[in-house]
Image 1 (cartoon, rainbow, N blue to C red):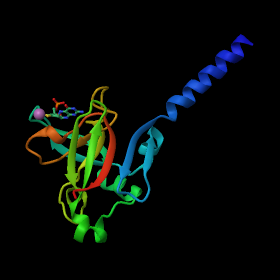
Image 2 (cartoon, rainbow, N blue to C red):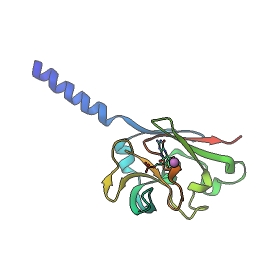
Image 3 (tube, helix red, strand yellow):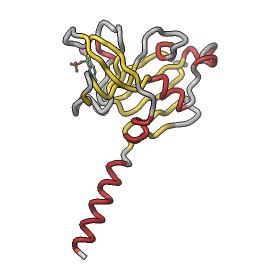
Image 4 (cartoon, rainbow, N blue to C red):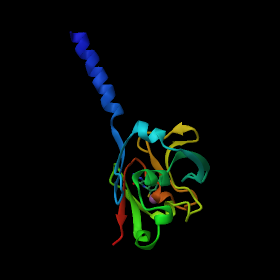
Amino acid sequence: MKKLLLLSGCLFGAWNVSAQVILKVTGEVTTPLQLQASDLKALPHTEVKAVDKDQKEHHYSGIPLIELLKKAGVTIGGQLRGENLVKYALVRATDGYEVLFALPELDPEFSTRTIVLADAVDGTALPTGVGPYRIVVPGEKKPARWIREVREIEIRFAK
Ligand SMILES: Nc1nc2c(c(=O)[nH]1)N[C@H]1C(S)=C(S)[C@@H](COP(=O)(O)O)O[C@H]1N2
Ligand SMILES: [Mo]
């Protein structure tokens, strides 16, 4: 009986960990998202090259932010005009740090760079305190918007 309890405890523990919400996409969306690790892994990934604080170029692998916006039903592409041009994505981390991106910065119809929610650098998963997900902005001279430990993306209207 003791063994059975122990086993069910372990199984419940494993289920609990795998069901954990890693990232939320909220606000001005048609479908709010509560994504678990497996949901995030299943999204399209890409690789970008970017110069980190060490002034060296690294290869970052991650989910283009545009993919998350598509999944949540944000006004991008043909819908990104008129009043929708004053919408932005407010990105929030576990330590309370926040940064924002105007939607056109994330939309390939406007921007030539791909901003990603990175989960690996040079083939290795991001370490604790940085990952599991960090924003990487290729071409940005200062990494202040490379927000670590991202936990929520809120789409808002600037008015
Ligand atoms: N969650 C979180 N991300 C953050 C910050 C922070 O305070 N919290 N600081 C930012 C700033 S101001 C810089 S310059 C870079 C620092 O990058 P580093 O981790 O390579 O030092 O991370 C950015 N990402
Ligand atoms: Mo900084």
